[in-house]
Structure formats: C-alpha cells, structure tokens
Image (tube, rainbow, N blue to C red):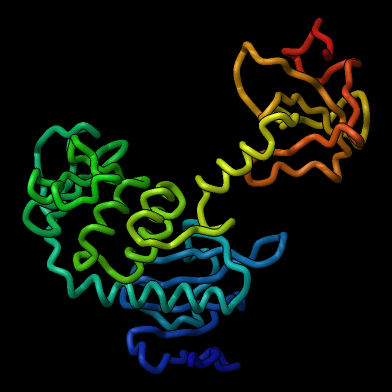
Amino acid sequence: MTMPASADNAPAFTPGYSGVEFGVIADGFPVARIDEITLAMLPLLAGGGFLASAWRQRGPLCDLTRANFYSHEGRLADEAAFRARVLETAEHRRELALLERVQMWMSCSTPLGASQMATIYEEGIVSHVTAGHGGFELSAERNSKVHPMLRAEGRWYEEDCAWSIVTFTYPQLFTSYERRCAERQLKDWWPEAWEAISGQVLVPGESHAKDRKAFELAHADDWVVIWALRSDHHPGMTEVIATRGGKRDHHVDERRFLVPATEYEVGRFGFVIDEARHSAYDGPSSFVSWSGRSAV
C-alpha cells in the first residue's frame, strides 16, 4: 500500500519501494522521485493530467515548481494512475539494474541507418540506435529460435513494433514492464501468431489488428468516412466524404454526407454512415478538391 503525501508536503516513502519518494510540489501537484528521475502529474484543461519528468532535482520536492518539469509522457486519469506509473517505473529501473546489458559505440551500417549506439543484451542480440529508426539485430543462431510465424528472415526487428518479437523470444533479457509492453504489441499487431502460439483466443478489444479486420468485414458494404471537416455552408454540421468500406482509392465511388457535428466522432476505425439518418449531400462543398463534382 502506498502512503499519501502529508499535508505539510513532507516526503512519504513507499514501503517495499525504498527508492520511491512521494510528495507535492509548490504548485500543489503530486510528484515522486526515483533516484535521479523526478516524475510529476501536471493538469490538463480537459481534466486529468499528464506525466512529466525532470532530471537530477536534488532539493526538497516541495520546493519544485511546474517550471522544473518537461516532456509529455502520456495521459493520466487521476492520482491513482500517477502512483501506478511511478511504481511501474521504479520496478522497471530496479530490474534493469540487474540485467547485464552493455552499451557501446559501434560504427557500422544497418538496414535502419548508421548505428549511433549499440546495446548488447547477450551474444547475438544487439539493439542499434540510429538517426531515424533503430531496432534489433539477431545472429542467425538467435534468429532460428524465433517462432516461424514471427521470424524475420533478414534478422532485423525494428523498434516500433517488431522489438516485441525479440522480447517474447528472449524474455529473460527484459524487465517485467518490457515484457508486458511486448505482449500488448504482439496481441495488437500479430494476433494470429499470438493465438497460435499461446492457445488463447483474443476477444474484441484485445487486438487492434483483429478488431480492425472485424470492423472492415462488418462494414465492407457500408459508407465509411475517409475525410471530414466542419461545414462552412451548414452551421453545426460536419461535411464528410465516404466510400464503401472506407477504401482510399482514386477508382472507388465517393459520396458526401452531412452529419451533425455533435454526433460525429471518428472512433477507432472510422465513422459509419447511417443512410436512414444521414442523407447524401450534393450542395456547395467546404472541400476545395470537390469543386465541380457532385454526389452520386
């Protein structure tokens, strides 16, 4: 159990996490220090807050102000979510210190660009940082251990998503936090492989790619919005351009509709037109590219 910061802004240390110090900064926002990193929950106008950080703030937490913090590291619903992120960060840093990763300068070319820094996780498993887009390189032997449904024949795994394949294959080289993130990525982007390997069927909401495929199948014959903007000619309405199944192709039919602005929300995969409520529109358009065209 974590202890709330006391009313007089004195720091509170969390039992079981001796390296975590909670407090409140001078502006009244919750803050926590983990070694040389200080995290704060700064407010958003729409409610909730976002995670910000500061480096090597040595003084009392109560003396810090919002000006000491920078970056935007994700939204937070409330203070409980902030504390959860802090403890997760502490866990990650503690486990990271126990891993024998070796960082070194390595001058070499990679399919992802020139390497600027390399981290050796273990023999045959190297992560490269490049100017634009880094990733992992596996030796032939290491790559042979990757499941065939996930294996990259070129032995390179980019840092956006494919890194999770390396983590899944060699979990002992990664922290609990990294393993949780990797599992989320695999479920999102390689659902067929995840289901085949784990034997677990992903239900709606557990995989972005699987949910998108289901959406596309369910709405293949529906008009799905591909462009939208507030109408200059009809106040309170959103003018949209839609295609069957939301296809983006110059050769497919496009149709315009007017949707109440209060009703229009993009959603995860697109806004589906309800033809019983949203009539096709062929009047003056707010889309410059639509000049001279009309609805079918």
